[in-house]
Length: 80
Image 1 (cartoon, helix red, strand yellow):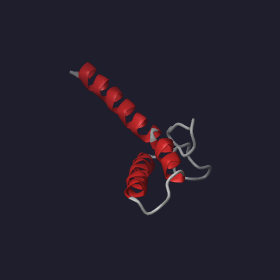
Image 2: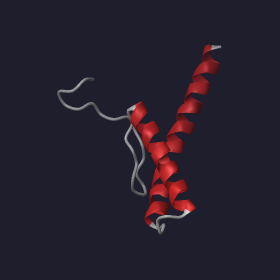
Image 3: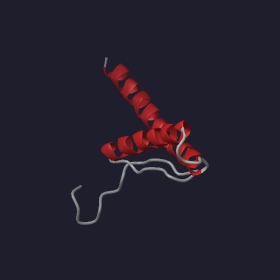
Image 4: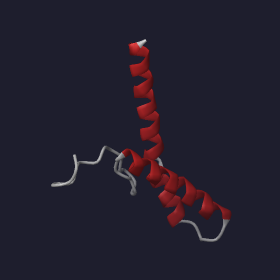
């Protein structure tokens, strides 16, 4: 049972990481959007969901193409 749990955890980690790493695509779509249409709100929601998840997990938030999420390094002098 422990091996199955570990395998599932790794799969879940990969799924979450892939989800967050899609954020630059939505940021790019937002930059190319005119503003008040439905696409603008769709892209905003998608980018925001990924940012919130990354921040709640203590991971970096990718913004530009090629950036990838990773666990944040602790701030010097801050909590570990």
